[in-house]
Length: 136
Image 1 (cartoon, one colour):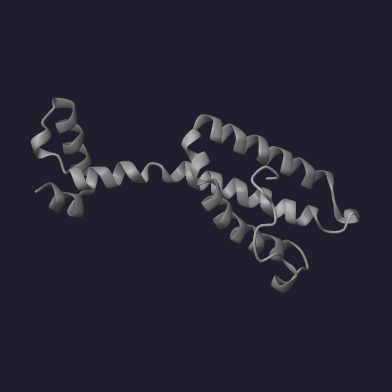
Image 2: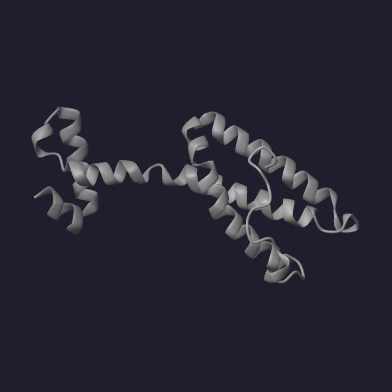
C-alpha cells in the first residue's frame, strides 16, 4: 500500500510515514522509498558545492587571461568562493570526499561560463581542470 501511495499521493505518503516513525510502527514503513528520499536530501549541499566550485573555476580561468584584463571583482569573487567552499566543507565534512568528482562537474560548467563571458572559443580553453585541489 505504501509504495502505491508514494506514487499516487506523495504528500499523504509522507504524512503516514512520519506518523509511523513517530509511533515506532516499523512494520508499515516504506523502507525503499524512505531511503531514496533521505538520500536525496544530500543533493542541495553537493549542488551548492558544485556551483560554488564552478564559479570559482570560471574566475580562475579568466584570471589566467592577460593580466591587463584582471579586475578587483574577479579577485574578490575568487576570495569569496574559496571562503564559502571552506565553510561549506567545514559544516559538511563528508563533502570533502566528493571534491574530485564535483570539481570535474564544476569545471564543465565553468567552461560554459567562461566561453559565454569572454571571447574565448572552446579550443582555446583547457580540456581538463588545470588546478589542483590545493590551488582551488
